[in-house]
Image (cartoon, rainbow, N blue to C red; front, side, top):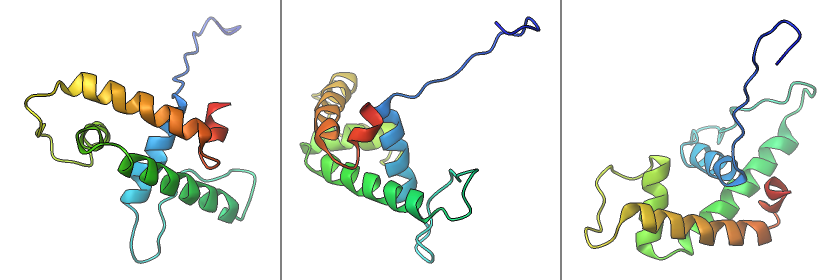
Length: 120
């Protein structure tokens, strides 16, 4: 609670959410200028280092997603709004599949040089 009696609330994203957000932005990048960065650094005129870090993170997440079994890949893409809304695996529970995919991704992201900084 602030001094003025205003309650301040923060939404804290999980490291997985941050990495997936960077990856989704990268997958939707503009092919003409390869620009996907929505987050601009306020204190620096040159965003090149931040853009390169995001690209490396997105590429690492892309490799991690492609390393998952197909049904888990589909669950991650559905979660991120990349795949169609229809769940292609009627014999599998989407929530359970997504949970197992997220666990596997978190383990791999913690070991990835490009993603581990978000888990500190």
